[in-house]
Length: 133
Image (cartoon, rainbow, N blue to C red; front, side, top):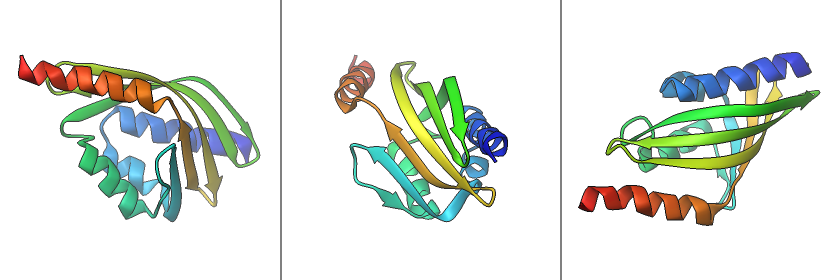
């Protein structure tokens, strides 16, 4: 299963990076757990969709999630990434991320990411300040 889980995780990240949001979200189980540490957990594909839409993914931001390391054991895929969020104003947030993806019956049932929210907030403030110049 580890090679299939790795393939699914890799395809998932490729969809995000190509701005194919619907295709990426279709890979999630209906009752997926999205644990975007340190924020509150989100349960359900449609709630994950709403979270990303509220942030502006696909409209205000496009993403380039660069997987630098990937390894799997059974149905759990560990991934180290550099997530780049490109804002429509030309600014970008570059964020190191460590994550796990759990795959069951061909669907992602758990998506968990760890990152430094302070780093994210500082970069987001800098990107948004470009709009005020």
